Image (cartoon, rainbow over all chains, first blue to last red; front, side, top):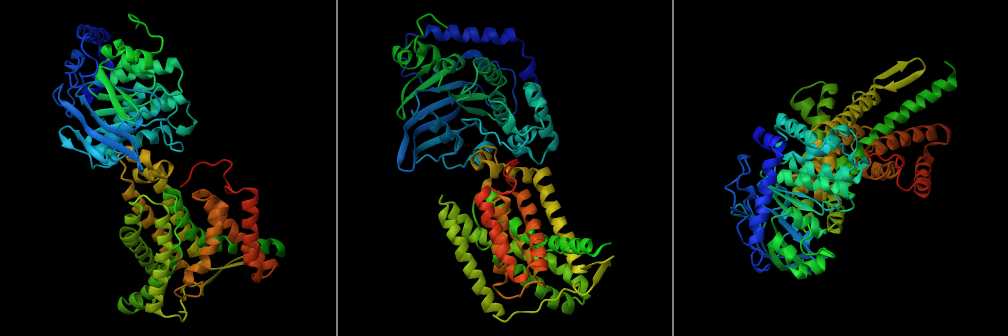
Length: 304
Length: 305
């Protein structure tokens, strides 16, 4: 636990930076490959040396999450058809696509808020397709839901306590985790006794993120973390996500803003009307004319 | 002390006593509504079962089998009634409500509460018959006197027990992990699941707590009401009115509204006659619905449950 904390805070920025650079380079070399068929590539080297072997982490590069032909539906209305994707240990994976493409639905399916009516979901080798949301949290999957969904009438501190519900019998551990979160997001300390509903949007997003981290997840799922927030706050949030990832947590990110999503992640999947239409390393996706045209707008070659 | 002041104090006291009884019945309703957005039409029958359990455990078991004095027997029977309510709540949730809720429909569990109500009423009718039982609390005969104000030991007991129950419930909701989780479920059930909170378990717990409160209310109401298998329904309509006046699902509002209705009722008896009680209470309810449909303290609405 204390190891995770130290990795969280005291990682020298230079080391992380160079790691990211080398990742970018190696990925650039393979940029000529087809962007559509490289879903199962090995993850980037940037995480192979993330030095926080908290006890829950398996060897880097192992398959963490695997969706196989998953179909999700609202009533009789299928929102996602035949979703097949993987998240490797230590990766950040982005799902991009326009409104209604099924990104959030996919994430809800991963977190157990929706049950797959076809296909299989495996997590750390185990079949979790039939597990309910609270069981998946215990298995190590945490979701920061779309729209933040903090408990508005609970205080900030109580919200964090709810995030650490799985450790409720171990009060010192919960207190230590809350202390870590407040260290990480000082605004939450200032607001600790306020009802969460009185927080600003950015503060609520930080609270929702911290609340999810309270369960010490192996896989952190984020649904539209930038939604409705000022650019400066979005930058902060994405910096936090990168830090969390460096400390050893794998991330599955759904993001409307494809540029943020592709900049932050190692690999990405592009969804359109409930299907995956492209996947690959983010550098490849950024170079893909279809992705550029549809989701990156005016982004030109060589930019970013 | 001038007579008019003594009279006002006397009736306020009577009102608080009545109000405490109503609050105990209404709290369970509001708790269930707050956590799972469901009206429990069988709540009245849990009150009745509490009353019968208290009656039989006080008059038969405790005095005859255990040989306890009347006062101790009655106090003990309050716990029996709570336990009976809790147990029955647990069983009915496990057998009826939970399986129906899992089918993802809100209407079926609601209608099932009506079915359970009919079942419990007729079950008790078959067991206990239609003739009213006379359930006397040993505390009713003791009258305490404070200047010109009189009250029975029973009413003091009711106020103390209600205060303990309300205080205990409040402390549970505010300061325990499970209580906070209950509030989380009431605010956002889906997100509570994402926290690793098993909402099925917490919904079951809510029903057990609400049923235990109903049983408790039954034990305290037993000596006041006409004890038949349909006794609960005589107070449940007023309890519904209180829940609505307090703002559905709002615990604080329910407590305030309950005491308020009790006091209004006491003064109605004093000045207008007991025949007008229901008229006054329900005119108040209609006025409330017209003026402020979200309940008494909706303006500074803190939270449900």
